[in-house]
Length: 256
Length: 256
Image (tube, rainbow over all chains, first blue to last red; front, side, top):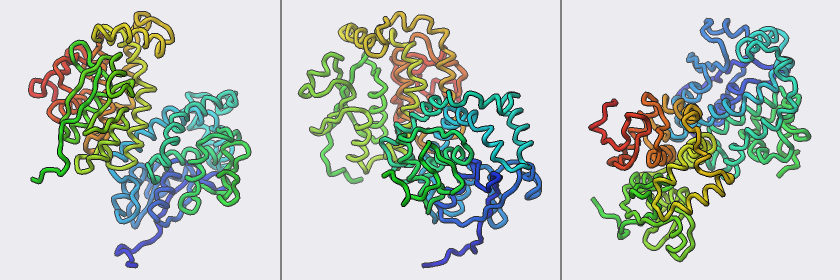
């Protein structure tokens, strides 16, 4: 066993956690997966939404921000590319440029055709689970930028009737996962982390689970949440279907 | 230069051509690209729609069907996997299992969110360009199976008003190709062939071009049609935008 030449100190990942300390941002979740996949230790550095501009010289305005031996990288996609470039001896997030294209397409599809339906159901939950000091900013910025001036309460009104829309929008993902164990092929790659991170975002805040208990997506979700010692098994996470705890460790699950 | 050990004879690719002899099926087009990519010679074997059941012992009911030294493979996806498996010394269609997943997802997205809009615009053109002996079968089978009993003429009625729908549906493809030269990454792979083959299907039959002249997709389309000596430069192909000939060889094009 030869130690790598580079003196390793833990990387630092800035995060805007919920009031219970749990990670919310799907872009932070995917970086957590990327770091775990590459076997890189990190320290999570909590920061308030309105505090992001006061860290690291005020050059950044959203998380994730990763600090690595003096280098600072922001934007989850740039961080993923940085990690593969800087740690080529570790497991790759992308084995080929074709896999990079796949990740980009998948993520854009997800954020165009699936996430908006979830977002409009969970944006008030997000407000309620946020740290008190983040709430005013969260309400004001979300209502103004993403919600066209509508109030959070109006946006989520009637959300139970829109559950079928969320579930139907996931059908292309089910079709894929019926024929491949991972979106990355025989092994997980960054495409899986992009997908899992959105479900972890929903699991962090939802008070109305998006999925049905028998959804075949749970096979992939459970294997994904178990990866790297259980990155997605945070005990503060909420169920994604009624009666299916997310946080429950593998040995306590009844499903195969 | 060492000759491969396997005695090579041209592969045979069964096709249902149009009356002008041009390939129509997007699934045959992608196999033509796959064979060219791997540098494998083939002979095209024309067959009528209703004649497919009389070839090769009557076991097949659609093209493409590929015959290779006594092996018969049908279904373009199975053919692609067969070619990579059988000719591993040739350029790969997929470099990783992740790239296979990418091809499957892209193709399903395309056939779910884009192709139906094109199909409903070009199904009558398809009928008119088909060989006379294929037309009755084509009308009857399409009206019954894909068009819910509507007549071809009804389906295409008002198609000029639906051009924006076709063009808008292609936006995710434009977003991708703004940041990668090929869907396969730095080099084309089977994902590109899946995409190009749908445009070649449209180019084979359309009497109302789907795209606008300035569409940025032409950068990728032109590079794609030029591949392997110009697989997509068949002189019988029709323009995909008014004033942009598809068949025109590269040296005669005015675009960069």
